[in-house]
Length: 139
Image (cartoon, rainbow, N blue to C red; front, side):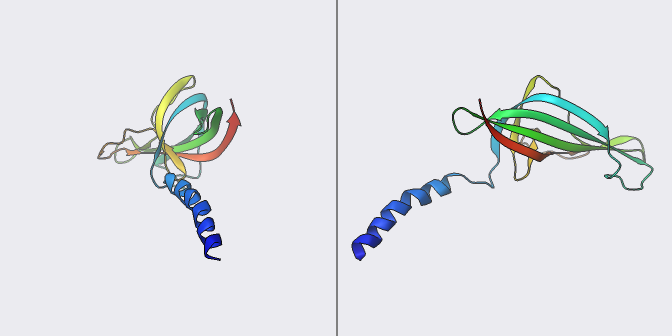
């Protein structure tokens, strides 16, 4: 009986170590190759405020996966908000992203940030790109 328990522990111990290897709370660094960028008016981010204008930027691209021979395809979205009062200014910025370029980013819980990981005092607020879709594919 004791021998079976020890054997079970020895088998499960490496699995426990592997499970601890990935910390999902720690940002994962990636290089995203952007294949497509589009934008459209966003009528939901500002509500009924006439002094606010929002634009949704949608970005498609891919990054190399952690497994050899795989890529992760992403569809991302960010709402950039322009406030007209007291003076016109960008309240939330998504940055400038263009197709056929590579961008260094950090995968957070459910978004990707392309901003440098340094202390920053707004304005404007730095928007992150929400992950709308992610899919692993073979290269």
